[in-house]
Amino acid sequence: MNETVITLFGSIDRYWYNKNYLKYFLDKAKGQPVRLKVSSPGGDVAEAVAMSSLMSEHGNVTVEFISFNASAATILAFGAKSIEMHEDGMWLAHKCSLGIDIWGHLNADQIENAIKELQNKKKSAEAIDLMIAQKYINRSGKTLKEIITLMEEERWMPATEAKEWGFIDKVIPGTHKKPQVTNEITDCFTALGLPLPVIASEEKPESGDKNLVSQIINGIKGVLSTGNKTDISNSNTVISMRKEFTFINQILNCEGVEEKDGKILLTVENLKAINDAIKIANDAKTKAEHDFETANTAKETAENSLAAVVNDLDSLSDSVKNAADNKAKVQVIRNIVGKIPGTGTASHQEANEDNKFADIATDPINSFENE
Image (cartoon, rainbow, N blue to C red):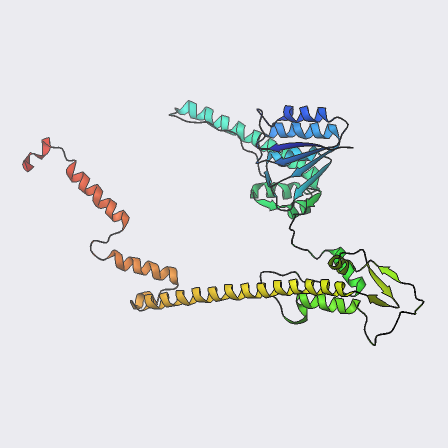
């Protein structure tokens, strides 16, 4: 069965991306699964709640969050059968906001009416916040306190955290996803007696048997036969296909490697492919080490330059030298410069300008002595 795709790229409001917009396409896709692709900063809560109900009534809608999504955009998704989010997407939940329009000169009675209006607005906002929080609670199973605290924080959370909170069902991996050592990979490597890969981090790559290249080499050693070579041309042992060596199979671009008498059969082309893969990994390791050294050298240069500047400042006077930190040193220098004639601060200069203006703006009639 085909999946109907609907896009919602923009704000949710009563004039465009609203309940009528969604209902039109849901009615056209009646009886068919629907994928609603959403990239929205939010908008009208009332419209979002209605859209959520429409998706719930349809019964087979998947919401796919793309990029940054906030506020009302997150609420509308809770009516979907499944919610997915791209790994580079962000999610934001916060308290609602209502329009306030108070301007002008008000007397006591008008101020009192404005206060009553604001109090009513506050009660309405609190009621809407509780309604929104209940939807988050129903979806995630979290407590009211946890949800309200999250809404008060008003912070963006990545897709993985949104899934941890229970707001989404699935994280869609990116095309160039950084490899992750998942539980499945851990179990597979452990079962095969292979070392676990350590994904490169921002820190300096480790040396010895802990780096990724050594892991690949050691893993291949475990797969390849050891000991004296035996002529198996006349052996009656059945050749079997070993498919569990998934990473080796990926390098060799094959379904599995052949095994005979407990030994793996590899061609020269196979060995070349494995050698090329190791070379690529080794080149990546070398580049990472070089980049780290370059960054470290730049850091040391900057620190040395800063130290030289601080030494020069300390040589100006003991008061600068004895300052608690660099920020304090700058303040001491400012105080010294401020005492030099003609170098007053901006505030002093403004004050002088005001005084000059005051001199000019004297009443000419009462200043006849100056005529």
